[in-house]
Image (cartoon, rainbow, N blue to C red; front, top):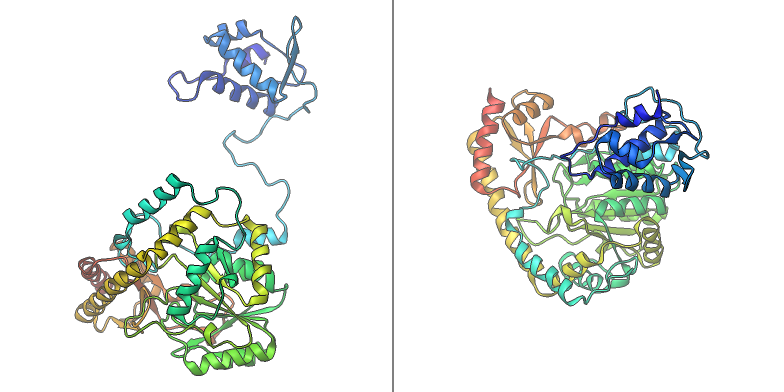
Length: 492
Protein backbone atom coordinates (compact mmCIF):
# COMPACT_ATOMS: atom_id res chain seq x y z
CA UNK A 1 0.00 0.00 0.00
CA UNK A 2 1.29 3.49 -0.86
CA UNK A 3 2.59 5.42 2.16
CA UNK A 4 0.12 8.26 1.49
CA UNK A 5 -2.81 5.83 1.71
CA UNK A 6 -1.41 4.21 4.89
CA UNK A 7 -1.00 7.52 6.68
CA UNK A 8 -4.29 8.94 5.41
CA UNK A 9 -6.07 5.94 6.98
CA UNK A 10 -4.68 6.67 10.45
CA UNK A 11 -7.64 6.90 12.88
CA UNK A 12 -7.69 10.01 15.02
CA UNK A 13 -10.16 10.51 17.87
CA UNK A 14 -11.18 14.16 17.77
CA UNK A 15 -12.86 14.15 21.18
CA UNK A 16 -10.20 12.14 23.02
CA UNK A 17 -8.17 13.59 25.90
CA UNK A 18 -4.95 12.69 24.08
CA UNK A 19 -3.87 15.59 21.80
CA UNK A 20 -4.13 14.97 18.07
CA UNK A 21 -0.39 15.39 17.48
CA UNK A 22 0.28 12.74 20.14
CA UNK A 23 -2.19 10.34 18.55
CA UNK A 24 -0.59 10.89 15.14
CA UNK A 25 2.91 10.40 16.55
CA UNK A 26 1.91 7.10 18.21
CA UNK A 27 0.14 5.76 15.09
CA UNK A 28 3.05 6.65 12.83
CA UNK A 29 5.55 5.05 15.20
CA UNK A 30 3.42 1.91 15.25
CA UNK A 31 3.34 1.85 11.44
CA UNK A 32 7.14 2.18 11.28
CA UNK A 33 7.84 -0.47 13.93
CA UNK A 34 5.38 -2.93 12.41
CA UNK A 35 6.94 -2.60 8.97
CA UNK A 36 3.88 -1.06 7.34
CA UNK A 37 6.07 1.96 6.54
CA UNK A 38 9.58 0.83 5.57
CA UNK A 39 12.97 2.53 6.16
CA UNK A 40 14.02 5.21 3.61
CA UNK A 41 10.40 5.81 2.53
CA UNK A 42 9.63 9.49 1.93
CA UNK A 43 6.69 10.84 3.92
CA UNK A 44 4.14 13.37 2.70
CA UNK A 45 4.86 17.02 3.36
CA UNK A 46 3.35 18.32 6.57
CA UNK A 47 0.81 20.49 4.76
CA UNK A 48 -0.25 17.61 2.50
CA UNK A 49 -0.67 15.10 5.35
CA UNK A 50 -2.59 17.70 7.36
CA UNK A 51 -5.00 18.05 4.41
CA UNK A 52 -5.39 14.25 4.12
CA UNK A 53 -6.10 13.86 7.85
CA UNK A 54 -8.10 17.09 8.15
CA UNK A 55 -5.83 18.45 10.87
CA UNK A 56 -3.65 21.54 11.03
CA UNK A 57 -0.15 21.60 9.59
CA UNK A 58 1.11 22.38 13.10
CA UNK A 59 -0.32 19.08 14.36
CA UNK A 60 1.59 17.12 11.71
CA UNK A 61 4.73 19.17 12.25
CA UNK A 62 4.68 18.43 16.02
CA UNK A 63 4.29 14.69 15.34
CA UNK A 64 7.15 14.73 12.80
CA UNK A 65 9.41 16.62 15.21
CA UNK A 66 8.80 14.11 17.97
CA UNK A 67 9.55 11.19 15.64
CA UNK A 68 12.73 12.92 14.45
CA UNK A 69 13.85 13.56 18.03
CA UNK A 70 13.49 9.83 18.77
CA UNK A 71 15.32 8.77 15.62
CA UNK A 72 12.43 7.36 13.60
CA UNK A 73 12.56 10.08 10.94
CA UNK A 74 15.31 12.10 9.30
CA UNK A 75 15.29 14.88 6.75
CA UNK A 76 16.70 18.15 5.53
CA UNK A 77 15.27 21.42 4.28
CA UNK A 78 14.37 21.14 0.61
CA UNK A 79 14.76 17.35 0.48
CA UNK A 80 11.76 16.11 2.46
CA UNK A 81 11.20 13.82 5.42
CA UNK A 82 12.13 10.13 5.34
CA UNK A 83 11.87 7.11 7.60
CA UNK A 84 15.34 6.68 9.07
CA UNK A 85 17.59 4.48 6.94
CA UNK A 86 19.33 3.22 10.08
CA UNK A 87 16.22 1.38 11.24
CA UNK A 88 16.19 -2.34 10.41
CA UNK A 89 13.42 -3.52 8.16
CA UNK A 90 10.61 -4.88 10.33
CA UNK A 91 8.39 -7.81 9.45
CA UNK A 92 4.68 -7.22 9.64
CA UNK A 93 3.14 -8.40 12.87
CA UNK A 94 1.20 -11.59 12.71
CA UNK A 95 -0.44 -10.96 16.09
CA UNK A 96 -2.94 -8.18 16.79
CA UNK A 97 -1.43 -4.95 18.17
CA UNK A 98 -2.81 -5.53 21.66
CA UNK A 99 -1.48 -9.09 21.96
CA UNK A 100 1.21 -9.67 24.59
CA UNK A 101 4.59 -10.09 22.89
CA UNK A 102 6.35 -13.39 23.46
CA UNK A 103 9.23 -13.50 25.92
CA UNK A 104 12.19 -13.62 23.56
CA UNK A 105 14.72 -14.50 26.26
CA UNK A 106 13.68 -16.90 29.04
CA UNK A 107 13.91 -16.02 32.69
CA UNK A 108 16.86 -17.31 34.66
CA UNK A 109 16.27 -20.11 37.15
CA UNK A 110 16.28 -17.50 39.91
CA UNK A 111 13.89 -15.36 37.89
CA UNK A 112 11.50 -18.27 37.42
CA UNK A 113 11.59 -18.90 41.17
CA UNK A 114 10.90 -15.25 41.95
CA UNK A 115 8.08 -15.01 39.41
CA UNK A 116 6.29 -18.05 40.82
CA UNK A 117 7.17 -18.08 44.52
CA UNK A 118 4.16 -16.04 45.68
CA UNK A 119 1.64 -17.86 43.52
CA UNK A 120 0.15 -19.70 46.51
CA UNK A 121 -0.08 -16.58 48.67
CA UNK A 122 -3.55 -15.10 48.39
CA UNK A 123 -4.94 -11.89 49.80
CA UNK A 124 -8.64 -11.16 49.77
CA UNK A 125 -9.38 -8.03 47.79
CA UNK A 126 -12.49 -6.00 47.16
CA UNK A 127 -14.82 -4.66 49.85
CA UNK A 128 -14.09 -5.79 53.40
CA UNK A 129 -16.32 -8.72 54.39
CA UNK A 130 -16.61 -10.71 57.59
CA UNK A 131 -14.45 -12.63 58.50
CA UNK A 132 -11.42 -11.47 56.53
CA UNK A 133 -8.41 -12.65 58.50
CA UNK A 134 -5.37 -10.78 59.82
CA UNK A 135 -6.87 -7.35 59.19
CA UNK A 136 -6.53 -4.62 61.82
CA UNK A 137 -9.58 -2.55 62.71
CA UNK A 138 -9.12 0.43 60.43
CA UNK A 139 -12.19 2.02 62.00
CA UNK A 140 -10.11 2.45 65.15
CA UNK A 141 -7.04 4.06 63.63
CA UNK A 142 -6.54 7.81 64.35
CA UNK A 143 -6.09 8.86 60.75
CA UNK A 144 -6.65 12.53 61.56
CA UNK A 145 -3.75 12.46 64.03
CA UNK A 146 -1.56 10.75 61.43
CA UNK A 147 -2.58 13.31 58.81
CA UNK A 148 -1.64 16.22 61.07
CA UNK A 149 1.73 14.70 61.92
CA UNK A 150 2.51 14.13 58.26
CA UNK A 151 1.34 17.63 57.28
CA UNK A 152 3.61 19.08 59.96
CA UNK A 153 6.60 17.33 58.43
CA UNK A 154 5.82 18.66 54.96
CA UNK A 155 5.25 22.14 56.36
CA UNK A 156 8.41 22.32 58.44
CA UNK A 157 10.59 20.13 56.20
CA UNK A 158 12.55 18.94 59.20
CA UNK A 159 13.17 15.50 57.73
CA UNK A 160 15.97 15.22 55.16
CA UNK A 161 14.45 14.68 51.72
CA UNK A 162 17.65 13.35 50.19
CA UNK A 163 18.97 9.83 50.62
CA UNK A 164 19.07 8.41 54.14
CA UNK A 165 20.80 5.57 55.89
CA UNK A 166 19.90 2.08 54.73
CA UNK A 167 19.16 0.95 58.30
CA UNK A 168 16.37 3.51 58.66
CA UNK A 169 15.46 6.80 60.33
CA UNK A 170 17.57 7.02 63.53
CA UNK A 171 14.85 8.49 65.80
CA UNK A 172 12.47 5.69 64.80
CA UNK A 173 15.09 3.04 65.51
CA UNK A 174 15.70 4.50 68.96
CA UNK A 175 11.98 4.62 69.79
CA UNK A 176 11.34 1.09 68.52
CA UNK A 177 14.27 -0.13 70.60
CA UNK A 178 12.77 1.37 73.76
CA UNK A 179 9.31 -0.01 72.91
CA UNK A 180 10.56 -3.55 72.23
CA UNK A 181 12.61 -3.63 75.42
CA UNK A 182 9.65 -2.54 77.53
CA UNK A 183 6.84 -4.51 75.89
CA UNK A 184 8.48 -7.62 74.44
CA UNK A 185 11.59 -8.18 76.52
CA UNK A 186 13.80 -7.82 73.45
CA UNK A 187 17.48 -7.29 74.27
CA UNK A 188 18.83 -4.76 71.80
CA UNK A 189 20.42 -1.42 71.02
CA UNK A 190 19.14 0.99 68.32
CA UNK A 191 22.11 0.05 66.13
CA UNK A 192 20.73 -3.50 65.86
CA UNK A 193 17.44 -2.37 64.28
CA UNK A 194 17.01 -2.24 60.48
CA UNK A 195 13.79 -0.77 59.10
CA UNK A 196 12.32 -2.75 56.20
CA UNK A 197 9.36 -2.51 53.85
CA UNK A 198 7.27 -4.90 55.88
CA UNK A 199 8.30 -8.28 57.27
CA UNK A 200 8.19 -9.78 53.77
CA UNK A 201 11.24 -7.77 52.70
CA UNK A 202 12.95 -8.69 55.95
CA UNK A 203 12.53 -12.40 55.22
CA UNK A 204 13.76 -11.97 51.65
CA UNK A 205 16.90 -10.16 52.80
CA UNK A 206 17.64 -12.71 55.52
CA UNK A 207 17.17 -15.63 53.14
CA UNK A 208 19.50 -14.10 50.56
CA UNK A 209 22.08 -13.08 53.14
CA UNK A 210 22.25 -16.19 55.32
CA UNK A 211 21.27 -19.24 53.26
CA UNK A 212 23.26 -20.88 50.49
CA UNK A 213 21.37 -22.93 47.89
CA UNK A 214 20.54 -26.35 49.26
CA UNK A 215 20.83 -25.40 52.93
CA UNK A 216 17.82 -26.36 55.02
CA UNK A 217 15.31 -24.10 56.75
CA UNK A 218 12.67 -25.35 59.18
CA UNK A 219 9.19 -24.01 58.40
CA UNK A 220 6.09 -24.63 60.47
CA UNK A 221 3.39 -26.57 58.62
CA UNK A 222 0.70 -25.42 58.72
CA UNK A 223 2.26 -21.99 58.77
CA UNK A 224 2.58 -18.57 57.18
CA UNK A 225 2.73 -19.09 53.42
CA UNK A 226 4.44 -15.76 52.79
CA UNK A 227 7.54 -17.12 54.55
CA UNK A 228 7.92 -20.00 52.13
CA UNK A 229 8.45 -17.77 49.08
CA UNK A 230 11.67 -15.91 50.05
CA UNK A 231 13.35 -19.09 51.26
CA UNK A 232 12.38 -20.95 48.10
CA UNK A 233 13.76 -18.11 45.94
CA UNK A 234 17.05 -18.34 47.85
CA UNK A 235 17.26 -21.99 46.80
CA UNK A 236 16.99 -23.27 50.37
CA UNK A 237 15.84 -26.78 51.15
CA UNK A 238 12.37 -26.44 52.66
CA UNK A 239 11.95 -28.58 55.79
CA UNK A 240 8.28 -28.75 56.90
CA UNK A 241 7.83 -29.19 60.66
CA UNK A 242 4.52 -30.18 62.27
CA UNK A 243 2.85 -28.01 64.91
CA UNK A 244 0.97 -29.16 68.00
CA UNK A 245 -0.45 -27.52 71.12
CA UNK A 246 3.06 -26.52 72.24
CA UNK A 247 4.02 -24.98 68.91
CA UNK A 248 6.70 -26.15 66.49
CA UNK A 249 7.74 -29.77 67.16
CA UNK A 250 11.44 -29.11 67.71
CA UNK A 251 12.33 -32.74 68.48
CA UNK A 252 10.76 -33.87 65.20
CA UNK A 253 12.68 -31.23 63.25
CA UNK A 254 16.00 -31.94 64.98
CA UNK A 255 15.68 -35.64 64.26
CA UNK A 256 14.48 -35.23 60.66
CA UNK A 257 16.57 -32.21 59.59
CA UNK A 258 19.53 -32.04 62.01
CA UNK A 259 21.81 -30.06 59.68
CA UNK A 260 19.41 -27.27 58.72
CA UNK A 261 20.92 -23.80 58.84
CA UNK A 262 17.84 -21.88 59.92
CA UNK A 263 14.50 -22.24 61.69
CA UNK A 264 11.57 -19.91 61.03
CA UNK A 265 9.13 -19.84 63.93
CA UNK A 266 6.19 -17.88 65.37
CA UNK A 267 6.62 -18.59 69.10
CA UNK A 268 4.16 -16.01 70.48
CA UNK A 269 1.19 -16.87 68.29
CA UNK A 270 1.35 -19.58 65.65
CA UNK A 271 -0.44 -18.95 62.37
CA UNK A 272 -3.01 -20.44 61.77
CA UNK A 273 -3.48 -22.78 64.75
CA UNK A 274 -3.06 -20.10 67.42
CA UNK A 275 -0.70 -22.10 69.64
CA UNK A 276 1.92 -20.46 71.85
CA UNK A 277 5.29 -22.19 71.95
CA UNK A 278 5.94 -23.66 75.39
CA UNK A 279 8.98 -22.64 77.38
CA UNK A 280 10.39 -26.15 77.09
CA UNK A 281 10.16 -25.98 73.29
CA UNK A 282 11.71 -22.50 73.23
CA UNK A 283 14.71 -23.63 75.23
CA UNK A 284 15.01 -26.77 73.11
CA UNK A 285 15.03 -24.67 69.94
CA UNK A 286 17.69 -22.34 71.34
CA UNK A 287 19.89 -25.29 72.36
CA UNK A 288 19.65 -26.78 68.87
CA UNK A 289 20.53 -23.49 67.17
CA UNK A 290 23.51 -22.87 69.47
CA UNK A 291 24.83 -26.40 69.02
CA UNK A 292 24.45 -26.34 65.24
CA UNK A 293 25.50 -22.69 64.82
CA UNK A 294 22.17 -22.15 63.07
CA UNK A 295 19.90 -19.11 62.89
CA UNK A 296 16.40 -18.71 64.30
CA UNK A 297 14.08 -16.18 62.68
CA UNK A 298 11.41 -15.19 65.19
CA UNK A 299 8.36 -13.74 63.42
CA UNK A 300 6.49 -11.71 66.04
CA UNK A 301 3.69 -10.42 63.84
CA UNK A 302 0.82 -9.70 66.25
CA UNK A 303 2.09 -10.21 69.79
CA UNK A 304 0.66 -6.88 70.96
CA UNK A 305 -2.74 -8.56 71.09
CA UNK A 306 -2.98 -10.96 73.99
CA UNK A 307 -6.28 -11.03 75.87
CA UNK A 308 -5.60 -13.21 78.93
CA UNK A 309 -2.62 -11.35 80.33
CA UNK A 310 0.33 -9.18 79.29
CA UNK A 311 2.19 -9.94 76.04
CA UNK A 312 4.61 -12.83 76.34
CA UNK A 313 8.34 -12.19 76.37
CA UNK A 314 10.08 -12.78 73.06
CA UNK A 315 12.22 -15.80 72.23
CA UNK A 316 14.98 -13.32 71.41
CA UNK A 317 15.03 -12.23 75.06
CA UNK A 318 16.08 -15.77 76.05
CA UNK A 319 18.87 -15.95 73.49
CA UNK A 320 22.42 -15.86 74.86
CA UNK A 321 24.19 -17.11 71.73
CA UNK A 322 23.16 -14.32 69.33
CA UNK A 323 21.37 -16.77 67.08
CA UNK A 324 17.84 -15.25 67.12
CA UNK A 325 16.83 -12.67 64.53
CA UNK A 326 13.67 -10.87 65.63
CA UNK A 327 11.33 -9.75 62.83
CA UNK A 328 8.38 -7.44 63.47
CA UNK A 329 5.78 -5.69 61.39
CA UNK A 330 3.53 -2.66 61.82
CA UNK A 331 0.91 -3.99 59.40
CA UNK A 332 -1.20 -5.53 62.17
CA UNK A 333 -0.93 -2.81 64.81
CA UNK A 334 -1.29 0.13 62.37
CA UNK A 335 -2.32 -0.72 58.79
CA UNK A 336 -0.90 -2.96 56.03
CA UNK A 337 -0.56 -0.17 53.45
CA UNK A 338 2.10 1.52 55.57
CA UNK A 339 4.58 -1.22 54.53
CA UNK A 340 6.93 -0.76 57.47
CA UNK A 341 8.58 -3.56 59.39
CA UNK A 342 11.83 -4.03 61.23
CA UNK A 343 14.53 -6.53 62.09
CA UNK A 344 16.40 -6.73 65.38
CA UNK A 345 19.59 -8.40 64.25
CA UNK A 346 22.38 -9.83 66.40
CA UNK A 347 25.08 -7.13 66.68
CA UNK A 348 27.46 -8.62 64.13
CA UNK A 349 24.66 -9.08 61.57
CA UNK A 350 23.11 -5.60 61.71
CA UNK A 351 25.59 -3.81 59.43
CA UNK A 352 25.66 -6.54 56.73
CA UNK A 353 21.86 -6.62 56.78
CA UNK A 354 21.65 -2.85 56.28
CA UNK A 355 24.12 -3.06 53.39
CA UNK A 356 22.06 -5.85 51.83
CA UNK A 357 18.92 -3.72 52.09
CA UNK A 358 20.74 -0.89 50.30
CA UNK A 359 21.17 -3.23 47.31
CA UNK A 360 17.41 -3.86 47.12
CA UNK A 361 15.92 -0.38 47.58
CA UNK A 362 18.52 1.92 49.19
CA UNK A 363 16.26 2.63 52.19
CA UNK A 364 12.59 2.64 53.16
CA UNK A 365 10.69 5.94 52.58
CA UNK A 366 11.85 8.47 55.16
CA UNK A 367 8.71 10.57 55.69
CA UNK A 368 6.49 7.67 56.87
CA UNK A 369 9.29 6.63 59.22
CA UNK A 370 9.49 10.17 60.62
CA UNK A 371 5.72 10.36 61.04
CA UNK A 372 5.74 7.04 62.86
CA UNK A 373 8.53 8.26 65.13
CA UNK A 374 6.39 11.27 66.10
CA UNK A 375 3.37 8.99 66.50
CA UNK A 376 5.34 6.93 69.02
CA UNK A 377 7.10 9.86 70.71
CA UNK A 378 3.88 11.76 71.39
CA UNK A 379 2.12 8.76 72.93
CA UNK A 380 -0.35 8.05 70.12
CA UNK A 381 1.15 4.61 69.45
CA UNK A 382 0.73 3.38 73.02
CA UNK A 383 -2.81 4.79 73.20
CA UNK A 384 -3.72 3.15 69.91
CA UNK A 385 -2.46 -0.24 71.10
CA UNK A 386 -4.43 0.04 74.35
CA UNK A 387 -7.56 1.11 72.49
CA UNK A 388 -7.35 -1.63 69.88
CA UNK A 389 -6.47 -4.30 72.44
CA UNK A 390 -9.62 -3.42 74.38
CA UNK A 391 -11.75 -3.28 71.22
CA UNK A 392 -10.36 -6.53 69.80
CA UNK A 393 -10.93 -8.20 73.16
CA UNK A 394 -14.60 -7.16 72.97
CA UNK A 395 -14.81 -8.37 69.37
CA UNK A 396 -13.17 -11.67 70.30
CA UNK A 397 -15.78 -12.25 73.02
CA UNK A 398 -18.56 -11.38 70.58
CA UNK A 399 -17.16 -13.94 68.12
CA UNK A 400 -16.84 -16.70 70.73
CA UNK A 401 -20.32 -16.06 72.13
CA UNK A 402 -21.94 -15.97 68.68
CA UNK A 403 -20.22 -19.18 67.60
CA UNK A 404 -21.16 -20.91 70.85
CA UNK A 405 -24.76 -19.72 70.57
CA UNK A 406 -25.37 -20.49 66.91
CA UNK A 407 -22.73 -22.99 65.73
CA UNK A 408 -22.08 -25.36 68.61
CA UNK A 409 -21.74 -28.78 67.01
CA UNK A 410 -20.84 -27.25 63.64
CA UNK A 411 -17.54 -25.58 64.57
CA UNK A 412 -15.01 -26.20 67.35
CA UNK A 413 -12.96 -23.18 68.44
CA UNK A 414 -9.21 -23.41 68.86
CA UNK A 415 -6.98 -21.23 71.08
CA UNK A 416 -8.33 -17.69 71.30
CA UNK A 417 -6.13 -15.92 73.83
CA UNK A 418 -4.10 -13.92 71.30
CA UNK A 419 -4.05 -12.47 67.80
CA UNK A 420 -6.55 -11.16 65.29
CA UNK A 421 -8.00 -14.46 64.09
CA UNK A 422 -9.71 -17.58 65.39
CA UNK A 423 -9.01 -21.11 64.19
CA UNK A 424 -12.10 -23.34 64.05
CA UNK A 425 -12.52 -27.01 63.23
CA UNK A 426 -15.32 -28.30 61.01
CA UNK A 427 -17.54 -30.72 62.94
CA UNK A 428 -20.42 -31.47 60.57
CA UNK A 429 -18.61 -33.59 58.00
CA UNK A 430 -18.30 -30.85 55.40
CA UNK A 431 -15.06 -30.73 53.45
CA UNK A 432 -12.99 -27.55 53.63
CA UNK A 433 -13.41 -26.70 49.97
CA UNK A 434 -17.20 -26.95 50.13
CA UNK A 435 -17.35 -25.03 53.42
CA UNK A 436 -15.23 -22.17 52.06
CA UNK A 437 -17.29 -22.04 48.86
CA UNK A 438 -20.57 -21.94 50.79
CA UNK A 439 -19.26 -19.21 53.09
CA UNK A 440 -18.05 -17.12 50.16
CA UNK A 441 -21.41 -17.44 48.41
CA UNK A 442 -23.04 -16.18 51.62
CA UNK A 443 -20.80 -13.10 51.68
CA UNK A 444 -18.37 -14.40 54.30
CA UNK A 445 -14.59 -14.53 53.82
CA UNK A 446 -12.88 -17.50 55.45
CA UNK A 447 -9.71 -19.44 54.68
CA UNK A 448 -9.20 -23.18 54.91
CA UNK A 449 -6.52 -24.59 57.21
CA UNK A 450 -5.17 -26.70 54.35
CA UNK A 451 -4.14 -23.45 52.61
CA UNK A 452 -1.45 -23.06 55.28
CA UNK A 453 0.02 -26.55 54.83
CA UNK A 454 3.40 -26.58 53.12
CA UNK A 455 3.16 -28.17 49.64
CA UNK A 456 6.22 -30.31 50.42
CA UNK A 457 4.83 -31.55 53.73
CA UNK A 458 4.00 -35.20 54.29
CA UNK A 459 1.28 -36.83 56.37
CA UNK A 460 3.02 -35.83 59.61
CA UNK A 461 1.93 -32.23 58.94
CA UNK A 462 -1.68 -33.01 58.09
CA UNK A 463 -4.37 -30.92 59.81
CA UNK A 464 -8.04 -31.77 60.43
CA UNK A 465 -10.62 -29.87 58.36
CA UNK A 466 -10.98 -26.34 59.59
CA UNK A 467 -11.01 -22.64 58.79
CA UNK A 468 -9.52 -19.37 59.97
CA UNK A 469 -11.88 -16.50 60.82
CA UNK A 470 -10.76 -12.93 61.44
CA UNK A 471 -12.56 -10.84 64.05
CA UNK A 472 -10.40 -7.75 64.66
CA UNK A 473 -11.70 -5.65 61.75
CA UNK A 474 -15.40 -5.98 62.61
CA UNK A 475 -17.74 -4.54 65.22
CA UNK A 476 -19.64 -6.94 67.50
CA UNK A 477 -22.81 -6.29 65.49
CA UNK A 478 -21.04 -7.14 62.24
CA UNK A 479 -19.61 -10.27 63.84
CA UNK A 480 -23.01 -11.48 65.00
CA UNK A 481 -24.50 -10.85 61.56
CA UNK A 482 -21.59 -12.66 59.91
CA UNK A 483 -22.01 -15.69 62.20
CA UNK A 484 -25.70 -15.85 61.25
CA UNK A 485 -24.79 -15.93 57.56
CA UNK A 486 -22.08 -18.51 58.19
CA UNK A 487 -24.49 -20.71 60.13
CA UNK A 488 -27.03 -20.59 57.32
CA UNK A 489 -24.33 -21.39 54.76
CA UNK A 490 -22.86 -24.38 56.61
CA UNK A 491 -26.19 -25.76 57.78
CA UNK A 492 -27.81 -25.75 54.34
